[in-house]
Length: 413
Image 1 (cartoon, one colour):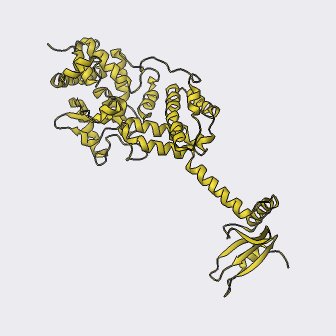
Image 2 (image 1 turned 90 degrees about the horizontal axis):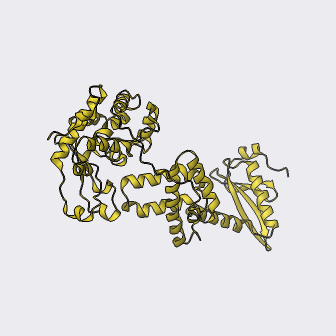
Image 3 (image 1 turned 30 degrees about the vertical axis):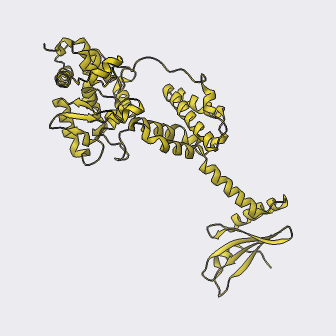
């Protein structure tokens, strides 16, 4: 009898009862009464008649079915039951998938997510998704060696992200320790990399303090050709000088535009985990200029949760690198980053004679003096309102080249 051809398989019509079309070497096509066509292979193992399936025609072609048949015959020739071998391979793949780097990182992340601020949690998962998963995500976590991590983290540092490399090493160390307790890894290869990465530069965040250059920056922001949302975030950043993460995760429910206040939740502040749970919101007085920016933005994003939603999806905030990338494109790479607006404002306000306590409270800095931090509950709110408005007015004058000296920001006694 001639062996089955692809044309014959395609033209095979259903009958009242199932029937087989032989394809050689124990392989056959079983045609069912409902028209379904299944590849089957019969063989003998330890003297017993056995059968293994190779999929459905035409999803699995004749050539593919024959290739699967030959593989099964090789396994059988080695003394192993092809059916048992396939089940073991599927089980091993399932275990590998469940215990992959991506799966264990995700499980660890979900376990600890509520302990972190939104900014910190978003930074962790964003870094894992962009810098670890595409290269190591599908690997069984127990198979990862120190060399695997070193190569990847060095590649990250070579693009200039030294701190990201160190952060990932630290986070992955936590993940591996979790995997050890879970029983899917035997050791923490990330711990072996201490001292193997380039050290982090200890310089402060780059910033601009020269009034003339600040004016140039503000004019560049005013003319920024990117998205309206990014430009609004850039314009608001120097006016509120909060931490970039606090701004990116800002929600409309936190703002009272009539009162001119923004209440940053304690969970988003830079505090220890235990403190976040009891911390009161940080009050940020809004200048008239800041309120106008928000009023202009509200028709665009006010229906959603975030004031500055991401470009790809409104369910997540603006990405961590958006503002820094925009500053780079405007020609200020190396001069200032989004976090640098804080140092810019702090420097100018201190030089102008504003209260150090008011400035530190506005920056949401923790008082280094423990006793003072315990008993000094003053918010300096009225002074901060005046200071924030004076700062906004000063920036306006720098933007239009109306001021040359920081004395224009001098606090009025």
